[in-house]
Length: 298
Image (tube, rainbow, N blue to C red; front, side, top):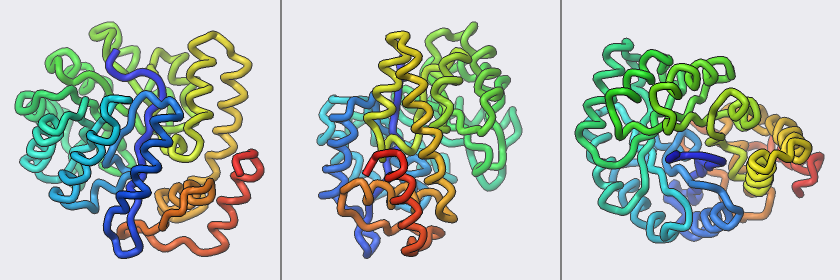
């Protein structure tokens, strides 16, 4: 199994001028690694991949791979609107020493099922790293259906898993039921924090979700409890995560609220977020703090 457990789509911390804050990124990365997560995804949606240049990404990939130094899996989000850039960044990630890549579906013009099959197969044939598909229909305008994913799993050995960010666990369940008989080693992760338990019950392998930036220890404890068949402890963690899900709703763009939550837990970062993100206002920051206090996080 390539991907199992709890993974973080790490925020990209910027200075107020929009430059990547390498010093605080180092502190945050080390915190997530030391908390015991199974891996970190750089340049996912929460990492604002859509607003960072190819050259900035390359520089940061080298930094991150060197810093992590094989302590956990390093996954690089290489999705974009130009397939040439996707392949270029994927090959760069391999050279830099990353463990895998994550590729979101083409967006703006959502592909047909046949076009999606061709798109991902073309990339799989052009790169060497293991590939995690990324299904986020709310953002891309098209869904990676169980039919498409099953085809790719069967015909592309290097496509080894999927992050299914669909707010409907039955979609993830159908993926598991379609793909696992073909590829038992194919990983199915949920992109919604509160779906860890139902993901596992449905035959999936865990989560790749935003609140791991804020409370990675809670997710690690939940995963260990589930693996140890300590359902009482696992449910207690899941209940806390369900309560913390309110953080996503505080700001117009959830990335802003997640950065605020990281700051509120003690990392002295700027909450600057690339456009179309907006600065957090004091009332919103206070709401984030309130949610964290109610759950005993701060």
